[in-house]
Length: 178
Image 1 (cartoon, rainbow, N blue to C red):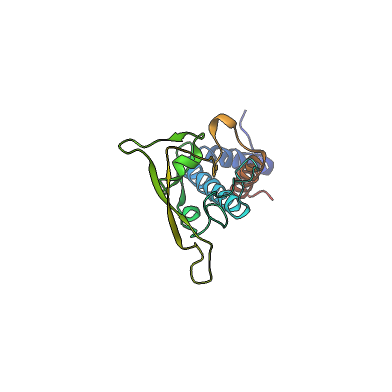
Image 2 (cartoon, rainbow, N blue to C red):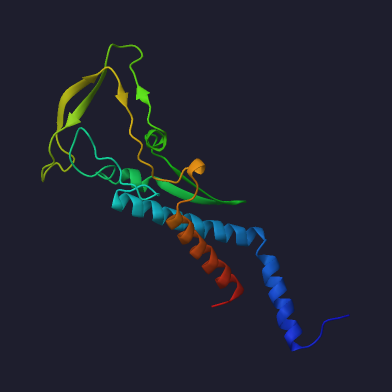
């Protein structure tokens, strides 16, 4: 039986709009919005010095100051892009691979000891602190400082809520629902 009448026309328009939610254009827009939300959540974690699960990052051992925020380069290294199935977040900072990984031991390969320099106290002229003396170690254990959720630990509640709010807002905006 054919559908007729003004109420039926509104229903047909709603069905058309809902069908568009599966379009590549909409998925792209949704992925872009969710990626931007994820970047904001990462920035919030850097400001608070906490991982996505709410745990405070361990303080630095060989210098003073806040962890991972001295220059701002690490926080600024993140980017997001929409994908066909959602979005992807990544960083150009290679050292973050170590921070995201479970703690592990680093040992020298061709020498008897590892060598690196510590830092002195920050000053007005040098907020990162002056390079200090060389430190030698037979091995070093890395420290985990998560900046993004781990798949095996699942989505943190705060992240899930923020991403759900954003997805809801994008869908409502697309459908013209307030």
